[in-house]
Image 1: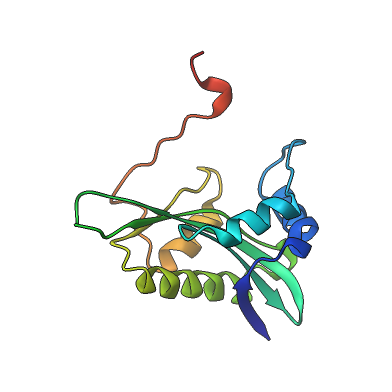
Image 2: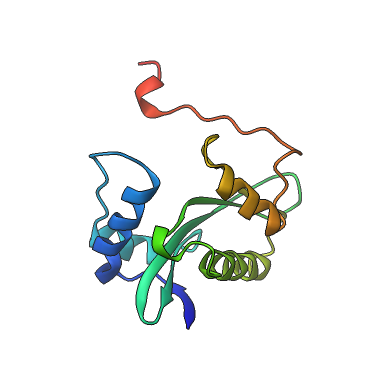
Length: 148
């Protein structure tokens, strides 16, 4: 049984484990107090997906103010990951369906996400879930590349 819910501070260790499956970084630092802050932020939602009571997926949604469509925001989904052992079982679809319902409730004009170029299986999954990978091109500049 799958259930999507807002993350709680007690989920921090499990979320960090999931992030480690997404990126190889020694500086992943998921803090319970940060999850608590995010839960109080009306423009941010950190969700987890439970399978049989265990957190097996997560995604962060940020609502971005926009001037193009009145007061309608758009959403950016980041750090979406499902435990490797549970990929292909519907957890990711449940997570994205929950996010879409959340964004509809916030009157979002669109949902955007980025995915690492090498994650071809993830790209096919996103496309099956209705995301277009050919209509726009994403760009990213990491902090280590910022000009000082």
